[in-house]
Length: 332
Length: 283
Image 1 (cartoon, each protein chain N blue to C red):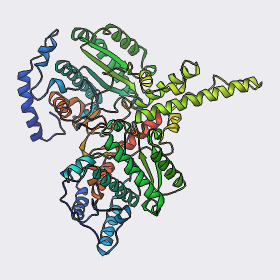
Image 2: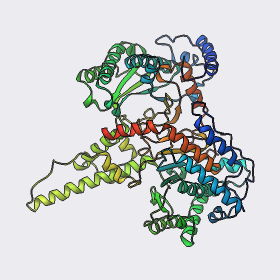
Image 3: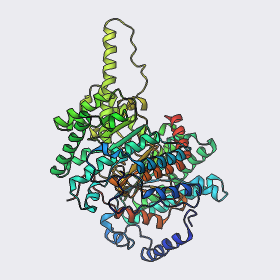
Image 4: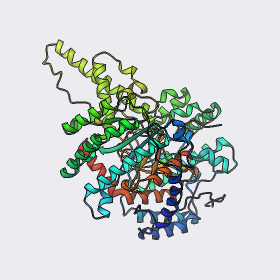
């Protein structure tokens, strides 16, 4: 049985209707109809499995959702969406629930949006779960976040869950040595067990800083170069022809290979919820030509209609983005 | 008059700026810092101004096309807007201003336009040296200088030398700059040091890396506090990627030649109201 919204939506961010693009107004009016019954995050849900609902009303909602997705799929769809999940604590304060519970509801929003992205055909989804700077916060909050992470990973590992249903591959990007032993082992185990999956790819950045990712990649590239030259010098000693001095210069591709995100395409859209307009050290290298969006919605409130709006905005800007990306490829 | 704003909105913005124009006479060169702080428009507080502002000067060609002018006219108008922004930054106490004049991707533009732009940069730098010396502005040019015409490289070097000791405002022009190339060239120089056995890969950390970037030395003024991008584009486009990790971003639909005092004021007021946490929570 579908659970309607159990609290009034505090979302002040309604769609600004652009008079220039009248074709959007049809989709917007459809969305307005769906707002009252689109599945959203409910703080009372206990398990991620409960989010996949059954029943007549839910089937009708699913049908409408599929129709909407079919409509927007006429335009270019993003392949990779990245989220900066801001606003959990403010959400908890607004709803007068316990502070730690805001992060729990945030976790369910991650699962909900993973399901929506999967339905839309967005193959890659990245979330900024925890920054290295966040370690400076109140130790109790840090500990509760780490415990939440361990608990959820262990739940996923133990039983059949949404991750398995979608055949999802889970990555953890970040400096995992900074995590506590149990959290790190759980993360590595989950990465290993989903490594062969071929479905959508969920990358969780925890604990992550883009500057330290870049420094790490630079350090690895330097070490690789040194070993390469060392190998050649050893080769010289064995009497083989010297090849030093004829090396290709270090390039963007070399650094790309050593980033945590190697193998994933760059994000097409970066969405930062709760209205702040900054990147906060997230994917600086990879988001050069990404479309940046900052809706005022708090992260736990971010649902299907917000995602649809984000994709529509991306589709509007798509021609410029493609042009710039092609120019950049020619240069680099 | 910015074309992209509705008349009602621009009337609202013009009204406060008329008042502020009454309050802020043109600062005399050599005015003391205390006197300058009192020349701030009423909406701004001196203690919450950004120390370093970066601008992506987008929209010159579009501005010209909208008026049926050649793109050269758009770039000249953009130059005037930059001069105005420099003057306002100097007057309001912003310590550093970085302007993205020409990106590495712009080399693919038509040859005529590129040549015009190189000539424009040379003229602008040459003509502005005297004013920089008078106003205490230090000029720096960053970017891949190997592709610039030799005369421009020479003019830029001379201007940097002449204004080296100024300290009122640090003006950095990014010509033929690309954030990714900046990071790659820093990586190459570090790799060279590793090969020369001056450094081990394990010793490379963030501050060491930051010192190799073109914006070094990495002091408190290196990283922009506020990054303004005009003409409605919502992306960074390869500008100061590393350095803008914690910058507040401000996007405006105004095209760059129309970016004037009221737009700049709006950006600074917006910056004032931002809650900068740098990942830590305030208790």
